Length: 422
Image (cartoon, rainbow, N blue to C red):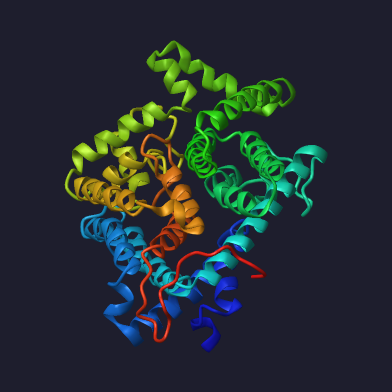
C-alpha cells in the first residue's frame, strides 16, 4: 500500500496507465478507477483540505463542481429518477480517482513514465488497427467490421474517437525521443487509423488536435506554423482521395457527408445522420425543462414527449435517442440552464488552465486531447456516459498537475527535465 502512495515508484504509474490499457475491454477500466478512487479517498481522509484545495487540485475541484453540481440539481424532479440519482451518486468516484492522480503525478519522473507507457500503448493500438486494415484481422483475431475498430472488437465503435483525442500523446513522445521521420510515421499511422474508423466526429477531433499540436511544435522548432501545416493539409487531401478510391466503407461515409453541400435542411439532416432532427427535439426538451433539465441521463424518456409520429429515433419500447449528440444541447436538455452555465464556467477555467502549458509535455497533450473532444461545435458522444466521463476526467486530472504544489512531506516542487532511463 505504501508504494501506491509514493510517486517515485512504479506501481502508481502503472495503476494510472492500466486505465488506458483496459479501455478497449468493456467496463474493465472501471477497476483501476475504483482502486484510485479508494486511494484518493484515503488521501483526503489523511490530509483534508490540502489535497482538494491547493495548487492543481483546486483547479480540478472547481472544474469538477461545474459539471457535477448541475447533475445533482437535476435529480429531484428527473423524469428517470433512478438513473439520474445513480449517475449523480457514482460520479464522484471520478473525482476521488483524479485527486489520487494529481498527487501521484506531482513528481516529474512519474509524469515522464506515464507519458512513455501511454505513448507505446497507443502505438500498439495503431499497429494493431493497421494490421486489421491490411489483412482483415487484428492481433486478437477480430475481423475488420463495418468500421476499422482494432482492439475494441466488432460492435464498440470507440477506437477512432479515442485515438483521435489521445494521438497527441504519441506525437509529443516521439517528437522528444525520436527522429523527425519517426514523428511523421507516427502521425501518418494515427491519421490512417482515425480516417478508416469512418467516424466523422473523430475526424474533427483529430483535425483540431493536429492543427494545435503542429502549431506549438513548429514554434518549438523556430518555424512558421504554415511550414508544417501546409504539407499536412496536402498529405490529408491526397490520402483522403486515395482512401476514397480504395476503401468502400470510407467512400460511403464521405458520400453521405457530401450531401450537406446543397445546404438545404434535408441535405444537412441526411449528411449529419438525422442530427438536425435530433437537435430540434433537444431544444424543445430544454424549452420545457429550462431550469434544471429533464434529468441527467434521462433524455431517452424526454425525447418521446416531443417526438412526431414516425420519428426515426423512437424505439419499439417507447424510448427515444439516448443523448442529444451535441455537447451544449446534451447538457442543456439534461441539466437545463444551470448545466449550461456550469459548462460555460468550466470552459473559462479550463482555457485559463492552458496558460504556459506547452512547457509541460504530458499536461499539454492531455489538455489538447480533452479540449479537442470538448470542442463545442463537434457532434459529441455522451458527456455523462461512463466511458467518456472517465477518459475526459483522467486527462483533466493530468492537466491539473501542471499547477504543482508541494504539500507532500519532504517533496520539493520540480520542473520538467528530459527523461533519462526512466
